[in-house]
Image 1 (cartoon, rainbow, N blue to C red):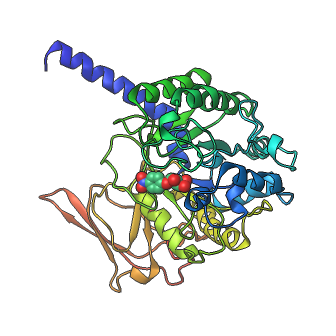
Image 2: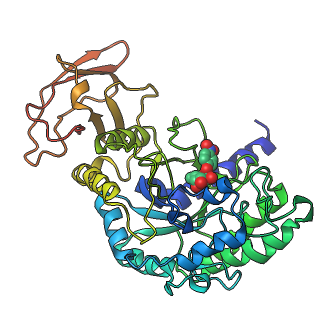
Image 3: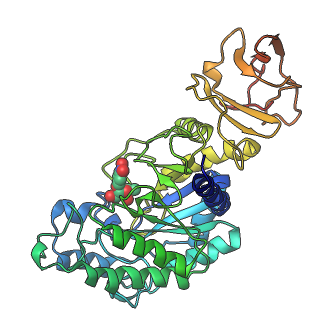
Length: 419
Ligand code: JFZ
């Protein structure tokens, strides 16, 4: 490599080290709560309601006049996130409908000025998170805004109230997006990350502008890849809905945003719920591949997380708390292959096997290609740390061990283990 190449390579390494340090709190957290909450909870047909119905702005505004979520209790939500084992919360400060769920001087279409509620839920959440040691993060729809006359997206615009040819994007960008981001990044304490979405049509110049702008306000605040469709922007990658990525495919850290049923916003129509067991399965799959899981709830118009969702999260939480050592701060599997029986996470000196009980082979689980001699294995959730039956064979030529592990006689969890 020539001098210039070396320098460039060195610079890239420095950049990567910087990024790793910046994203460390997030990659260590592994599991977060996504909250889609807004006026769309009232009609209860999901967060695309206004667009699907082509509801005129003056009609949609009536929902704001009705919105009075008196049952909202920030502490209860934060407690639930904690119980589930989630370490950060990402909430829709503003979704595509343009309604700000926080006090905003930049646009009166916000919860303090347009609704009878008279409280700022983002403020209350910021305080509750601070108290509980949970990192608060905001979702902000920066390109789509069906309420604003000048927002302009590649496809999904409000064309029933506004004419495309009359749109001046800069009026929206300078008049609403940036002032509101300033409010979110200056009035609510330290924000862990901004979750941007659906950037279709955003120019490279505006993409750079917003990243720069956020950095100037809170240099430590992370941004996800959906901030822009231009390659490589954002501090980490948000995969598609429910899409579980392979580790190493992108050099950046990644997350899977996931729904509990099949919707983001509160809906009474969709009752296809993932079970707690399948949620644990998905969590294992994601963290085993080195990613984060951002699991969504859709609170009601009264301000409550539906009990069915809460129950599932608490069940997941029983598992995450018992097996915390194998989740937080771990790395993904060293083996690139899909595992039929579950997933693997690691930390120095330890290999955590998350094995589904029903998939444990009768004559023992075999793992090939381990460099180290394994000292012992036990079920992580077993307080007595009783050792599991373990056999190892050693291949001189390859310098590798093969391990055969017997299922615990009385498994405590669907997924277990540590070595
Ligand atoms: C977007 C939003 O439109 C939706 O309402 C919700 O907030 C969700 C989390 O994000 O929808 C998307 C955007 C991108 C993909 C999928 C759904 N994607 O890249 O697969």
